Length: 334
Ligand SMILES: Nc1ncnc2c1ncn2[C@@H]1O[C@H](COP(=O)(O)OP(=O)(O)OP(=O)(O)O)[C@@H](O)[C@H]1O
Image 1 (cartoon, helix red, strand yellow):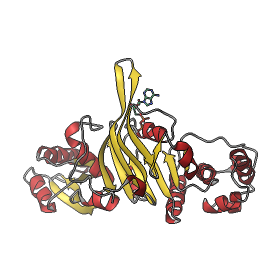
Image 2 (cartoon, rainbow, N blue to C red; image 1 turned 90 degrees about the vertical axis):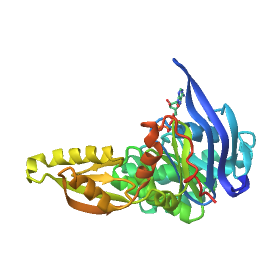
Image 3 (cartoon, rainbow, N blue to C red; image 1 turned 180 degrees about the vertical axis):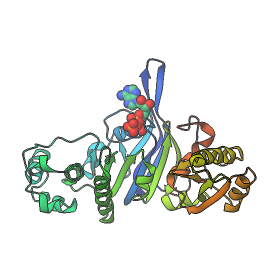
């Protein structure tokens, strides 16, 4: 287990509940989070799982009910003033002047927060906006606007960046721009903590992840180790022996029911079925053949974080109602 000082973020027993009409609702429940210094750490979970609440507690915007939090070994919120200069964050949409250029917006912001004016050009370069820095903000694409928002967090040259769902509302090109920007920040030695409810998207950029549901940690570790723990997956196409094209969808749905009844976890992917944690692909073909369903396509599928998440929450219903940490995968943050 890493010491608090080796980690950018460490929480222990973090708990926050909110008053609701039904009494109290859980925001975060005894959360132990370890974010190694350096690299991109994905903080993943479905909507309402407690990601924003956790981030707001780390930044001193919401008070925790219980537990401890450290940023670079400094206990927060008690020592937040000592460490806040090392942290940049986007928690809400930042406001920029629409008719001012990106450079002018950053210059104004640098002045307002006491960052050196000389940082502006370095920041524009770091988020890849140097060629468009003179253009008005309102002419920017959503991806560029979000890169400028990331740039604003870099003015004080922080070591840790915290981004809450930074790709929300972006098109695929914008998502890629933000992903590449985050990767670049980490490759230059910063720590990026990024929350998302889209596991597959963060899988492409994260070095390590923590997966939560209903405020509880389900798994944490390197992406490679977590997806490696999930067994093999396959994609199968099925047809009816009669070859009636109009019934193909029916054949797929029937195959899904048959495989689920045999204890497999299955989800549709286009015309195919994604079958998780298969010991041997022939198992799938045998089960289907025994029910007069013919496999006409069988592809190996990479196990992804979504499969891992579904496996972790499989016994607990959507959102993992009562899921606790799984010790066999919760291994890896060194
Ligand atoms: N200010 C609040 N008052 C009452 N309940 C809240 C408040 N903020 C969050 N919650 C509740 O706490 C739980 C966790 O919410 P939170 O926003 O932290 O989750 P999230 O993982 O960030 O979700 P999303 O991806 O939708 O933002 C949810 O059940 C939510 O309804």
